[in-house]
Image (cartoon, rainbow, N blue to C red; front, side, top):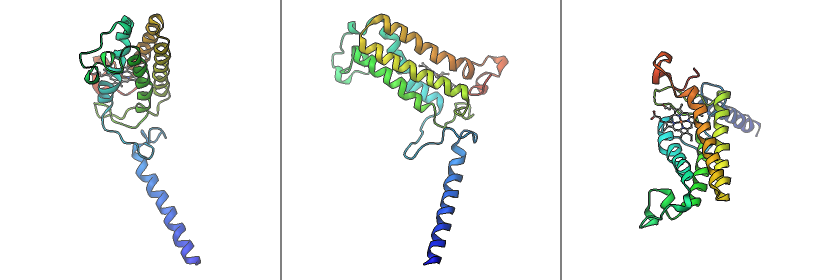
Length: 188
Ligand code: HEC
């Protein structure tokens, strides 16, 4: 009986050590942020997440400054690749783009590589502040779209552009003097 308990405790302790060891490389340089929770997986580098998810959603918001209610539904809205003319189109598409941006902020907290092979700096305090900026801007869009008010969506689009730019200024835009693309994802 006692031996059984000892063996079980040893197994448990060993198990915990093994799990910790496996998580360690995903922790953004050991800063304790970015380890995926159970069930989460990453599939793209940061550039691909930007191009595939963040950028298309933001374009819906920027286009909405021309009054989404005037967008003509596509011939077959159910298959339209343009959210604004799709079955969930016009202002609803703008609401959804706000949610997409706010949710995509979560994707920017996961440990993943940048296109130059560096790790996205998800443990950095300013990165986390910029991610929160994107989250807030997304929810500002969501609320503005619910109000169906073009002035409010124009202000919200401005908040989105600021949220993108704040992070890009530090982590994306690298002049040749700053080392160019190979120095993306490190603070300037
Ligand atoms: C928290 C930081 C952060 C935020 C917020 C952010 N980006 Fe990015 N973005 C980056 C970084 C870093 C890169 C470079 C990624 C790489 O090269 O792997 C990038 C790259 C991109 C690219 C690809 C550029 C290229 O070279 O092809 C696009 C497009 C983009 N971002 C759009 C946006 C838009 C639109 C927003 C706002 C809605 C946004 N991003 C918000 C950090 C951010």
